[in-house]
Image 1 (cartoon, helix red, strand yellow):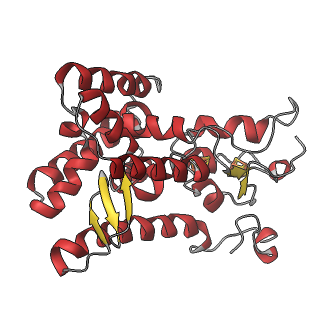
Image 2 (image 1 turned 90 degrees about the horizontal axis):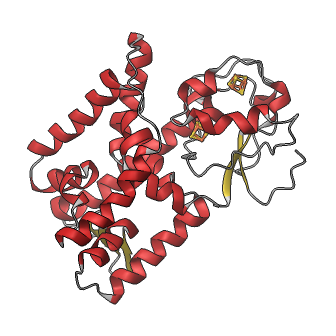
Length: 288
Ligand code: SF4
Ligand code: SF4
């Protein structure tokens, strides 16, 4: 399906059915689970499509992929870094520079399933406790990580990174890893809405910066249809990114959601009853 077009019958339908209200959510979940299955198929079934984990892997024995943040940590820690790992980090970085850095968060990261569940449960249970943590804290953590790697000579974030702990736990025994995921889930559920990814996780902050100028963008191209129902803000993990695109027409602002903090999750597209949003790209000729 074209990223730019929504079927005409859907454009004019006042009600979306259950499937179209969750189309991108279902696609993302499939992608996240498929990714995990591919990583686990090697150790458990002997099907080595991907060897390794999200930190560092090899696809079909030819394509090396390395998490660029882990590469940075290794460099700051003073570890020897292999050329294949550098090529892998550049490959991964280029991919996210084009598709949007935080696509990692919503389409790849397994922790996202726990944080999405916490957000959904919060709204179902009408939990309102929301400890205010400035979103900038994640950038402070991000800049602390290399500093601490340099000081300790270790890739220090990976000792506490829930993504790494969870993936390692799945392969070598999941006991502790479930505990870490549970902590993140309980934090988001009871302490603050979308707190882990939205305010603390340096991985999301890193990928947000990496994809700040990415090509693939969500477009609020039909913003004149908006009825201010608030559904998009409700489901968006980074609702602040919607405001300029949706409400900035009078100020001459583009309807493209341009913030690198947008995860390109597609939930706003799914839930908007007026079909205001669609996936598009930065080069679209859009009149503000
Ligand atoms: S979900 Fe659609 S109609 Fe509702 S506030 Fe968002 S853009 Fe407007
Ligand atoms: S603006 Fe839309 S695509 Fe971007 S993070 Fe929010 S819900 Fe997801």
